[in-house]
Image (cartoon, rainbow, N blue to C red; front, top):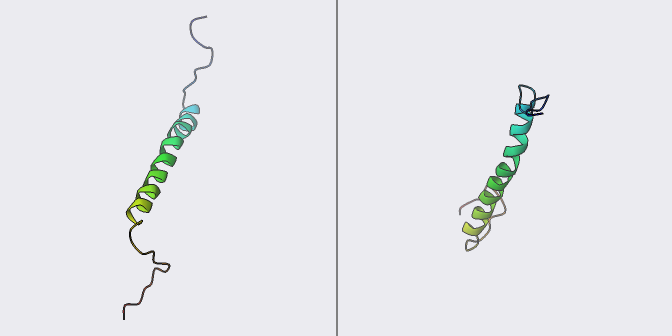
Length: 55
């Protein structure tokens, strides 16, 4: 038997496979963004509120 009877990638399975193959890369990208933000903010004093009052 040369080819499988049911193709692995068709109209039903393509979105599912695409999602599961791209999910790890998306998670890595988000983690890298948070890590770079952490590295950039290491030397700065941390602000706990978004609304700061400058006197």
